[in-house]
Every structure is written in C-alpha cells, then in structure tokens.
Length: 557
Ligand SMILES: *Cc1c(COP(=O)(O)O)cnc(C)c1O
Image (cartoon, rainbow, N blue to C red; front, side):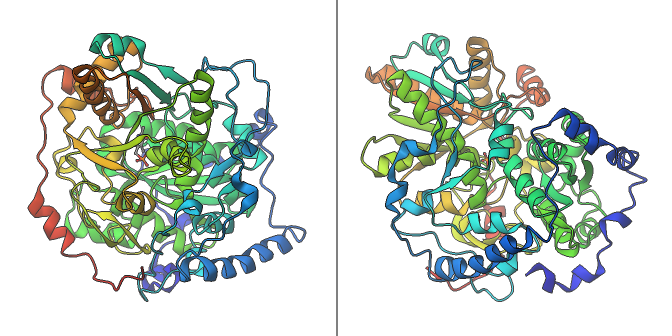
C-alpha cells in the first residue's frame, strides 16, 4: 500500500536527512565501529545472516506460503483449523536449570513458544483493510513495512509459535521476570485479598517492551534489513527498540513525540546511548511531519503523527522497515511470554487468580499477561475476571467507538477495526504538557483486544490520574518499586478491588501487571508530591469531532 503513495517519491532518503540541527548529530559517525564491539561482547548474538543465495529459497518459500496464508486467513476471515498437536500446554517449556532465579519462585522457566489467542477464538477478528482500496490487506501490502516472518505472525491462526533460540538467549538477560506477592501493600490496605504482581521492569529498558523489540529486530536482521524506524511517545518503546538494535547491529531512527522529546531528556539519552538517532515529531524530514508543522509550527506532536512519519520513511526506503511497539497482533503475541511464565509461577505457588488487572495503552502488556490466562479460561480450567484499566484522559475502550480506523494520523496504515477516539485525536493533556499517563495516549486499542472486549471476555474501566498516583505512592512506600505512570492505573484498580474485598470479607487472589518502573518519569511524581497534579476531564466534543472524520467503510465481518 505504502509504495503506491505519490508522496513516497518526494521523500528524502534517510541518508539525506539533515541532522545538523539535532542534538544527536555527531552520533552517525559513532555507529559504524559499534557493531564489532557489540558482537565481541555478545557472542551469543551472531551477526545477522545476509540474504545470501543459501538463504534465498526459504525466504521465497515463506513469501509463497504467505500468500496462501492470507488467502486462507485474512480474506476468508481467519477460518480456524484446530491443531491437536498444540493442545499440550506444557510443550512450550523446556526444563532448564537456572541458578539465579530472581522470581523467588522455583521452577519458573522461559517459555519456548508464544501463544496466539486468535487460534482459540470461535469468532475471528475482522481483517485489516487497505487504506486506499478498502479490501483486506495482502502480504505484499505490508512487505514494505515488515519482514515476512512478522507479517506471517500478524495473520497467523497457529496456536503456538516457536521463539527463536537467539531471542530466548537475549530474553535470558532478564527473564523469567519475578512474580511477587504484595504482602506489605495487603497489610497497609488491611485486605484479606492476596495481591500478586508480575514485574516487567527488570528488563534493560525498564518495561515489557523489549519482549517484542528483540524478536522484531531479530526477524528484520535475519531478512538482511539494515535500518529500522519507529515512533515513540514517552520513550519506553524507542529505548527498547534502540536496545534491541544495539544487540543485532541495526541502525535505528526514532520519531519521538515533540512534547516528550522536550520533557524527557533521559529516555532520549538512553536511545542515543544504545546508538539510535532520535528526531522530534513532527519533524521536517517527512512529508507528513512538514504538513503538521505547516498547520501548527508549535505542534506538540502525537503518537499518530509520529507513526505517520516513521511509516513514510520505511515505505520510501527499500532497506528500511518499520517497527511498532504495541497494537498489532504480532506484538501482542510476543508479549505472551509474560502470561506463560506467570501461569507456571502461580501454579508453583498453588494459586490461581480470581481477577487479573492490567493497564492498556495499545494493549500489549495487558494482552501479554492475560491472553494465556484467557486460553485456560476458555478451556474451563479457571474463571478469572479480566479487567483493563485506562486513563480517563484517553479512554479508547470505555468511550471510543468500535470501528475501522487508521492506526496513524495521516491515514497511511491499514484500517483496523478497533476501539478508537479517532485517528487525529490528540489528547488534551499532551497539549497542556501535563499528562502523566505516559504510554497510554494512543487513540486506538489493539484490534485483538477490542475484539476480545466485544466478545465479552474482559471488562474495562477508566481511572483519573490523581487516584493512580495516590496508589503508586502507597505501592512505592510498601513494595519499594516506583511504578511507571502507566501501571499506576493497574495499581489504582487493584487497590479498589482489594478494598472491595475488605468490605465484603473476600479472600480473592488479585494478579496485577506491573509493566515497568518509573525512574525516568519522576517529574510526574514531583507534580503529584507538590500537590500540583489535577485530573483532566475528557473532552467528549473533541472526540466526536475526531470520530466524525473516521472513514465510513463497509465492514467485512
Ligand atoms: C508502552 C507502555 C505501556 C502501554 O503500552 P501497552 O501496549 O498498552 O502495554 C504501558 N506501560 C509501560 C511501562 C509502557 O512502557
């Protein structure tokens, strides 16, 4: 699709990018010598296989099978063939003695397969549509943006997908992540509930995002791709991708939402430390960025705009692919290592969750923890309530409309059926520069989560930010960890539930997704501690205006 864009021809190549006005200008020279250094320090991470003659047949084969895959998948609406061989839950785990289990739960191991919930859904999610023809997308539409294996995963109906050994090797740097009982928080609240949290902040970037950044970069490297581009809001995703690129020797360009670029210097420095080049978005490097700047030279940017910029660059450069940190099926898939590990860890403890709570921005950490549990729920083994929490300032699940909409502001991505506030919705807090919801500001919700929500497998609520930070402070002062702004929503909802349990004397087991630490988000804590944080009301009228610009398409489902 992107290749057909007339504007692609107008784009400067990445190498023409005039970076003289950017703070990271001297970095490109640094880039060249770094890969050797990196490979020396990470012998496990072999240099990416070039697209050699030997590798070519398998690539071709995968493209061929892709076409038939999409014919059988997207176009016919994901017809589902049950695969008996995949029914053994434990087959994805390889017993591996690991001395330094930081989880405090013995026997937990790194999963060897990701779980694809689509395989177990009787009603398949509606297919993404080409933004120009409005027909279901085919692999060729996506291949300017993604490597073949990720396109295949995006449309896959397989229940389990093997995690490449190279990726498992890198996961070992921080996985398995700990599952911790919040005993001191329980005591503070005086609740009979038992609260557990699965903590993803132990990754090098400090969140769950490297779980998908690493495989995304690995598949790109395997296909011989040299450059990847992406957008980032708060900087969590950009830094995760920069980290993954540093391991595999790829160049990484990140468009960071202007407001965060200015306000979050440390995330930017992390990206630069890992060798990435960071551009504020909107930038004058791309057509979509220039258009936004023409309309508003002071534009604070948004994730939607930054996505447009990165997609545009990937579409115009044959050696460059695009990576997305949330929303897409393959991203949710990669995050299921969280839930697979957690199922084992809970079993070890002889516990089973009555309720699972997580925050949702694009939905990936939430899906990562909950989808494997939803599988067990569908099997009838357990019956936990699955609860998503979003900020009242950007409530795509609880207030957005379920419709086909673009993933970006300029309308270059496929149309996806999802809960959306409208692709050109810019949450007010970004304008005001005081939003503390960090990575929860995307206008849409993952299509797969939106679908699961419509099917009634989960529920959602929105919580205002002061309540979230109040909960975060209670959490920090009992459990020690300082949460990222996003999981403060999960914490606030967990506290609500724990207090409800206290009121009704219920000994429920609450499992919470603690998806990252807040060490680079301390200005938000400063605001809260100084009593300067206010709750922002959601502007319904603005959403209506934005929703009215969503294209009307004939649904395929
Ligand atoms: C990016 C991010 C989120 C939001 O993204 P999801 O895809 O909804 O998980 C939440 N928490 C943290 C720590 C993040 O970095």
